[in-house]
Length: 313
Image (tube, rainbow, N blue to C red; front, side, top):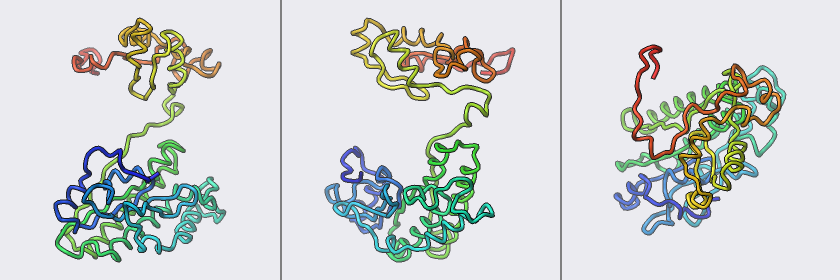
C-alpha cells in the first residue's frame, strides 16, 4: 500500500541516475498502484535519497495519493481537471449518452472509472501538468518520468484480448503516446528527449474462440495432491512449484509427478460434467491436458528439432 519500499532489493535506474547527479535530476511517477514505485525506487526512504514526485490511485475513490514520508505529491497533479469531460467523451463514443462505456455501466462508479479510455486522457493531462509546472526539462540534467497505462492489462483480464474494450484501450493508449510525443517536441524540443515503451505480459483469446479448453489450476493442484500428498506450492500457467521437503516426506520426486501429469486428461481436470462427457471444443475427454511435463532441471538438455514430415518443431 505504499507504506514502504523496503522490499526493493536493488537500486532502480532512477535512483542511480539521481545519486550520480546529487539529487538534482527530477524524477516522477504517475502510476496506478504502489507496486509501480518499482519503476523509480525508494525515494527518500533510501539513505541519501530525496522525495521524488510519485502518485498512484486510491482504490476506493481513484484520487491521486502518495506517501509523504518518502515521496512528493505534486500540486500540479492534484489540480489536474477535466476528468468529467473525459468520461463524457467515453460515454458518447458509441453514439449513446447513457452513462456507460459500451455496455459497461461503470462511468458513474468512482471505484472503476480508471478502467475506461477517458481516464487515459486525464492521466496524460496530469503528466503534461507535472512536466510543465514542476520544471521537468528546464536544465541540462536529464529528468526521468515513468507512467503506466494500466487499462490494456486491466481490460484484457476483465474482457479478454479479443473484446472491443481492449481495442478501445489500445487505440486510446496509442493516441496518448502520440499526444505525449507532440507535447515533448513543443515543451523540450525535437530530438532532445527519449521515450521508452515497455510491455507487461502477453494475452491470448478465450478458449471458446480457439475451440479449445482452459486448464483449471486449482483442480490440477487438488488432483496432484490426491495422488501424491500435500506437495504443491502453486500452479502457474507454465509451471508448477513444489515443496521439496513435502516431496521427500511423501517419498516421491518431481520426475514422478511429471510422468503422472503427462497422462493427466481433460476429463480429470474438468470442473463441469459436460466437459467430462463431451470434451472441450475439438478435444475429447480422454486427451492429455499437457503436451509436455518435465522437471525444470531438464530444460537445458532440450533441443528443438524440426520434424521432416510435418516441418514443425
